[in-house]
Length: 435
Ligand code: HSE
Image (cartoon, rainbow, N blue to C red; front, top):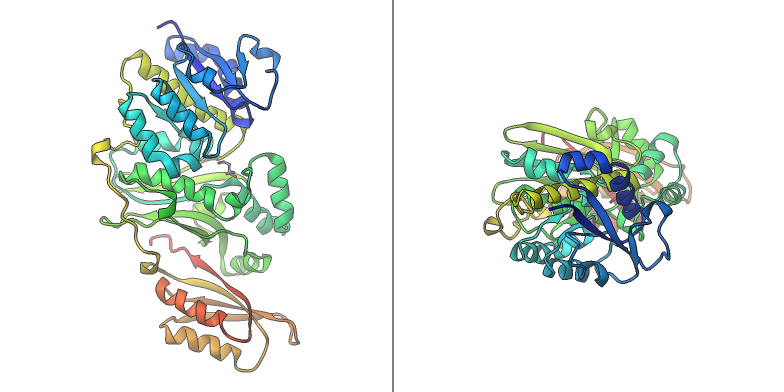
């Protein structure tokens, strides 16, 4: 084999990061792989020419020119979204190309079909950049932690949400302003509701869970709540109580079932995850043999994500050269040992809670709220009322001792139905680190 030839579909932020990486690291990559890795074709419908440093690279607007090119060994899909990305990947696989993607949405929904097609066609699927941007989390989980039963996954997997919460916490910047800033910096999704409503985090958790547990976890298996109803008052209360609010992906392995949830969480300020700020990502695994591991780094951006895609290119190139394609199964477990997911119902969980109830300041309201909580066996730890007496609604903040999620869901429904309650109650789960 004289060279490895790469075709790239999508010359956007990450695509140009990959091209730049392959260009600038060319020599050291050759020293590590044994042959040159050459970007030979780029497909993109939004550009008419490539920057001058890619004068040997052929630009096309038709992705078929890439997967039909017999010279190309590896097809990299970096257009995002479900279609046509899915069809491009399946077509490339059918043509016997190895494929690489950063497309977490696609893998968390259609991963099963894509991985099965790849195994059937004896090609590899690289997806390091789909979770944690430049952090080598997929490789760590598939290889470095392979000898562990993964007990817990906890992660800050969305840079935009973390940036928003950090800026609100550190500088009191309003939500909308920080979101605009994140969009300007290029790490928010095309549809930023994916970032804010926890969907992007759920995409990534689904992928990690597949590898960790050998289960076909789908996006729909994950319970998702976002951060759009978090107000500065919640951030201030969290600080006062010694917590930071973080959008966490959480999964705990209970043996015959596994938790799968994404929600804003009050994290004790002494915990490492409470101190991951800005657009950074961090993923904490607890393995039964290794104990706790924390991986930290840039979860988005042109060069960090380009670095992860380039690592996949190198991995696959090495496997092609040594004739050991799929030496490491795409999701670590051998396909025959993959099982359907077995997910813990949310109603089975329990933890302490923070509630912010918005009510009219009238006699008997507090006793009605505490009565509802008491009726559902929820024990109150503290109550604070903020706001001035008058006609404007006030915020009543309650912290509970450990309570069952099933009871909390019923109690919140009853509280929200009170005549004096003017807005849906905000509930934030409180993390107990050893839980
Ligand atoms: N929108 C994502 C984020 C990009 O903010 O983390 C990386 O997946």
